Image (cartoon, rainbow, N blue to C red):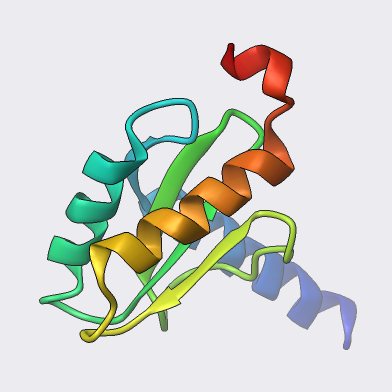
Length: 103
C-alpha cells in the first residue's frame, strides 16, 4: 500500500475510533452493558471492542475501525441476544483484565 493510502487509512481508523460510543467498562456490570448494546442493534449491526482503559466501545459495523482480535468482542446483528453479548464481554474481560484487578 502506498504511504499516502496507508496514512489515509490510519486517519480513518482513528477518526472512527473517536466517533465510537462508550457503552460501559469491562470492570462494570456487563449485563447492563449487554442490554444497552442489544438496544443499539435496532439501528444497525454493531461491532464491539475494548481498549487499554477497559472501555467497551461500539460503532456501526461498517464504520468501526480495524480492531485487533485481542480487543474484539464481536460484530452483532439484529438477532443477537443480550446474554450472548454478555458472554462475549465476560470472555473478553477474562482475557484483558487480570483477576487480581477485578477483586
